[in-house]
Image 1 (cartoon, rainbow, N blue to C red):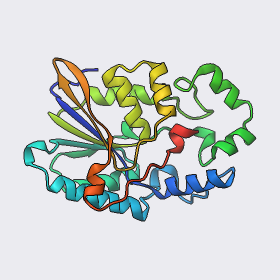
Image 2: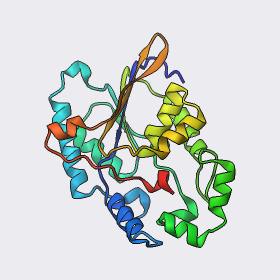
Image 3: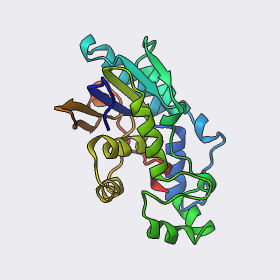
Length: 238
């Protein structure tokens, strides 16, 4: 994957959302359904997520200008948009791109893992057969579907240093696309890792190859007085 003219790409996962909090609580309680009044695109940041976004803003404000991104691209989902607005307010080159949105879950929307197993008992077996990367829930997207739109987005980037605001699955799939991480390694990695809210993962280009520079780092949140959280996204867990 070779975005022309780009030599640094950073990805910030959105701050903790009210959906993250509700999903974790519903899963822990063994409920089938997550109590969320909003559609997924409109789920806001939690109070802790807002603190994380403001901490990102203080951190970026303290950076030398040569380390600032010259292009900012955000998922259209409210939790990512609000994180971007808090982190780099008024950036001169910022845009929203629907290709950065979270994975669509189709009939699994607002269901916990318990709910999926109880209401669609045939689906876990189908996922095991197809594998996590290619399995597509009814009416939803596979990881491969999300990778396809991210691949298209990367080709259209037109900055030297590009900062993306996205979701947990974005961080996993950028490793697949930029580093060439094999499917088996990607799914094993994702199974054993939660990308923290407000964390930064970044890559730099070295001799034509993309090299991982930072992996889900949260030290900037701690430095700026915010509590890191590692709430799993339903889009990667279910």
